[in-house]
Image (cartoon, rainbow, N blue to C red; front, side, top):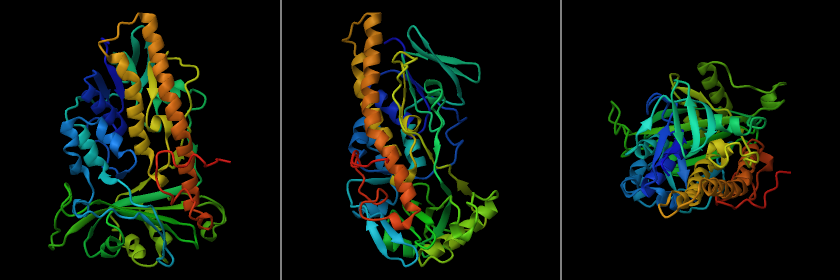
Length: 426
């Protein structure tokens, strides 16, 4: 193919796609709407579990060898601590469920992104305004007045994908879940996190059966990890932590007649986090109550989108959605990144024959070959991720309805690529 593959979006899915193409020697260009790598905040952590072998297979050797640079809590990893990702009753501290240990790593999103940027020439400050089909593939038009043409286009442009809006013009909108969430990243001393650290070296979660409020806690950087200050001014070891609290958006929550929306100010958001946790037992109480007043509080819109086949195929097999653009899901099963990685592998397997020098196809046969490749890709992705989106949605709802939780809840069941095929959305 004379024209490169165009990748829209330089998040984890777009960068993984680029590195996989780089490994295969397939030409590509990658575009990102941000002005520079550090334009966005550092983000949270990611758990790579059942996708980990696939992820490693996609990476060039120079990137794979440096993957340990992205690990959270290298001390625990090197010591062989796997963690149990235990769910706790926040009113009593009782451990209720855990996700059985399997091959998994907890990585820093921003360190992983920094690693995946290695060896790539990202074209920054490129926001897509439109995509059109042409004789040789597809052309992306950017708001800065420039354009790029490629033999194929992979849209990794996230939950609010422009490409999705074009392809699915009447059904592109995300579904809003009846749950609200606020959180922050905090630096705590070793003594401040000692109670949490004794429970798990990586992450944990839990709910309060009295209110149905939910807590997510994870370490982002620990002593010895890159980017984590080894000591504070008092000589104490420091830990960078992620703390999220969420609650059901429904009438009657906490005795309020109307559903409680996310407060409008950062100060009020922090006060609300502390109000939700005021009656939790230790160590869950203090981990929220001790959040400093100057912390940067963040909100997340809990939305999802069930993947759809591109039935009209207005791009004649030359444009696909990947990752959140294809199957945006909430984080309560931690599977979004894992599915995006598998997307890359499935797409690569479908496209590699088309970029082999051994193929000598007429224009008509090339077009059909692309259509067939996209059909195979979409068939697999939709079958795999439709149930994943719904499972994550149900896990989110279960997290905020304590009485629904049991051994079969999708919130606490083991994470496997297709473990929930018996789950019914009805």
